[in-house]
Length: 307
Ligand code: NAD
Ligand code: MG
Image (spheres, rainbow, N blue to C red):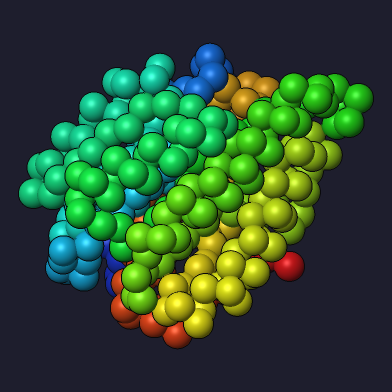
């Protein structure tokens, strides 16, 4: 695998590929920054979304999924996995992310699935409603809603530097959009459908520099629990995935360059996660294999504990 380095050879694992510490780069990253929202091609190293590694097993044949923020990062890894499992995949992205969106469309289509790319701003309730309407119209239904798009921006001093404008943007993108999309999707979700929200370890261990973001992730956890309670009797499962540090375009534009250098180094596995390492959990939560899992937040954190 191209990204492997710091390989520890053992007789059982001659290439070091099954050792979670060395499966991906574990040294410090080059200091780097980008304008928001960040683009995949500008990242060094390029994130791994499972392009070369994800193998589908027909687990989502005939299913229709919508992933917000599917152009890049975790959303792209989930799009690849869902498409290779046989699902048609619609995804949203910001208009300035066209380049990333085109690559994701190609990856979905290469898997033999239908792709629907929906540019727009999820801070707008009408756009959220249109996204659901267009997905349902194009795919003739919806089985899986992945509320994954998210906004974060670190503030140097916490509350003093946190503007009302930023606070509003973070809550609109991360919480209101989830509410609007889920509400619009509900009439179309049948028993067996699944909602998967992207939370964060920040929802449990808030950093002062990400106060607003962390609060939205705690809100997402709470909504995951209450939605699971209210939609369980309708046969709809609701869960969340809480990632730790993952190497995606969200990070370089929103963190100081010196923090990027050490990104993920403080996890027990000693490195940042790659988007590809999240995909299997989103597949599990979308499929019948997780038929008794609802109201859960599953951590994918490199060893850091939730709660
Ligand atoms: P990413 O930048 O690749 O994906 C986030 C996407 O959100 C963007 O591509 C963009 O399309 C979308 N988005 C942001 N604001 C939007 C808006 N106003 N309207 C429409 N779309 C908008 O980064 P990622 O890390 O893959 O992020 C995916 C999710 O994972 C986010 O919810 C993020 O909070 C969460 N998360 C990431 C990490 C990490 O370390 N990367 C850790 C924990 C949680
Ligand atoms: Mg993006």
